[in-house]
Length: 380
Ligand SMILES: [Zn+2]
Ligand SMILES: [Zn+2]
Image (cartoon, rainbow, N blue to C red; front, side):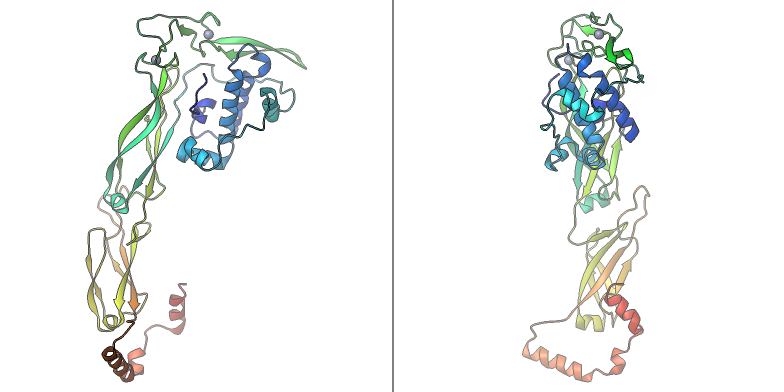
């Protein structure tokens, strides 16, 4: 049972990926009671199992930790300094009391049959793509560790060629009756059989590869298609590509969290791209055809005579593709940055001086109101 790799907390608690707070609490209470030290004195693994459940609960009951786990898995929690913290707890009884208060009795009824099919946990994997890849779409290869059905025993936990027999401990029922004393008298309840895990059957000779668990962690590689137009922090769900299920349950899902890397030429604004075009002041005055970057390579931009700083030239349909809308694209917005020439030579200074002297009110008259100008200059 002891494993160095922490299990998926959803899997530990046996809940769906989208379980709400109440379901999480309920699942943990149920599990914690099954693992109560009073009824598990015979089970040396109970404490470990309880710790595992408590750690899972600790992650999923905290929205911040949960979302970190959803996106980055256990590694994300560790690197974010949010790893499990149970050093402060003493014995399992202390732990139990911390969650339920002293005594912790009053067992409620149980929901799903213990040992029934459990869906495999979901897996979250990060994928980085460039802006160009996000625009064109890409097929990228991902590598991650997932729980798979054991290849040697095909998941039944038995060494190939050896029989699977009825569990002696529970007589094949999969559950045990546990009796606890409570202030209201004896309470009889059912717990999952600790020998067969609820299957009612055990391998006479456990599979040597998975030690009878029927499942094993394997590194998988998978090609994932990134659709054109994907945005940063968007998730792609691949149904059934997560961890393998237990007791015949279906596999979980794979979530690919896409990170679109910054591109120094563009700022993305939804489906639009924004870029800056440096235009020397004389050319802004005279008008010019200049080159601006676009996703499809340099494009020609007509800068009209008298173009003012901050003017936006919109190139329709030259932005990002619109996700799942074939053929539709956003715009490329080219912001004109008028550059005033510096470090002029003696001759250039003379030319500019003559230009300055020649400029009259007619050259400076604007179509724009003072207020409009102020708004534009302060970016309002
Ligand atoms: Zn096996
Ligand atoms: Zn059993």
